[in-house]
Image (tube, rainbow, N blue to C red):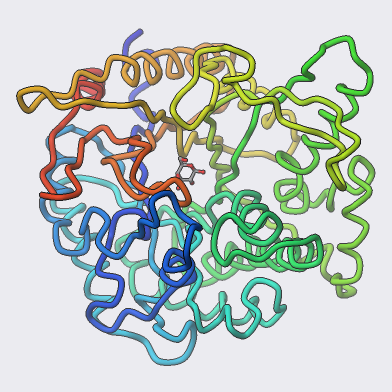
Length: 443
Ligand code: GAL
C-alpha cells in the first residue's frame, strides 16, 4: 500500500480536541467549561485526574505544530474552547482567546498545514450549563452567537469547519449515563439534549454557509460497526437494530432530512415533546462532508434488563479477541463497513474519516517508543479504507486520532493514543515509531 494509491488530493491529517490538550484552564480570561468542573468532582475520572494542564498546548502550541510539520502531516484538526472565546458562553468576547487561536491558525498556514476547526468538542461553558445547557432550547441562540463569532474571526483563513464532535457520545455519556460532563443521568435529560444538539448541528452549518465565502462544512459522527452476538439469534438481531438506531442513526438521519429513527427505537417517541412545528425542516442541512470516527466493532446481545434498548454490548475482553486498552476490539474491517454503510444514504457528499486510532501501553526505552501495535493498527485500517476507495467510495480524507498522548476523558491520562509520546510530569515529547511510520507513509 502506498499513499499514491489514494490519489494526490486525498486529505491526510491528525486530530485533537481543546480540552484534551490545551490545559491553561483558567488562564488569560478563559471561563470554566463543564469539563473543568466535572473533573473536580470525586471519583468521576480515573485517578481523579483532570485537564487543567494536559499537554499544555496553550503554551506549547509552537512546538507541537512544528511536530506536525516535522511529521509532514498536511492537515491539523483541532477544536475551539467555547469558554476561551466567551467566558460566560455568550456576551463579552475574550480577546486573548481569539488571539490564541489566531496564533495557532497563522502558524499552521505559515508551515503549509491546513487548519480544520471543530466548533464543539464537548466543553460547554459552565455558565451555560447552569442555565440548562444542552437541555435548554435557548442553546440554539447561544450556539449561533458562538459559531458566528468564530467564523467572523477565523473564517478569513480557515475554510474547513466541523460543527460537532460525536453528538451521540456526548449526549449519551454526559446526559444519560452521567459518566462524562456534565454528569447528568436519565432519559429526560438525554432526550432534551438530543433534540437541541441536533438542531444546533444544522443551524451551525447554516450560519457558516451564510457568513463564509467558500466554506467546506461538515460535522462528525461516531460510527460503531455492529453485529449480533449470535448471528442466528433473532433477539440479538433485533437488539442490534435498536442499538444501531441509537448509536449510528440518531443524529445523521435528521441532518439528512429523514427525521429521527423513531420506528426502530420506540423510546425516541419522547422527542416529540421538544419538537416545535418547523423543527423537522430545521434539523436538515446539506453538509459538504460527513466525518466518521471509527475505532472498533461491537457485538450486541439481547438483554431484558437494560432499559429502553434491551440490549448489551459484549466487551472485547469477554470475547477473548485482540483489543486495545480501551477494551475495544481491533477490527480493521469496521472502517470499511462504516464507509459502505454511510454512503448508502442518498444525499451524502464527501466522507472523511475524522478519527481513527488506538491506545496501547507504550514504553519508553532510550528515548524511543517502539509502538508496533499502533503502527499495525493504523496500517491495517488505512488498507481497509483503500479497499473501499478502490471500490468507488467517495472518501476524501483520513485523520489519525491523535497527535500526542492526552487527557482521555473519564479514563484520564492512562490510555495513550498519540503518534507522539508525552511525559506528563516533564511535558517532554517523543515521536513514537507509529509517528515515524505515518511520516514515511505520507512522504
Ligand atoms: C472519540 C473522541 C476523542 C477521543 C477518541 C478516543 O470519541 O472524539 O475525543 O477521546 O474518541 O477515545
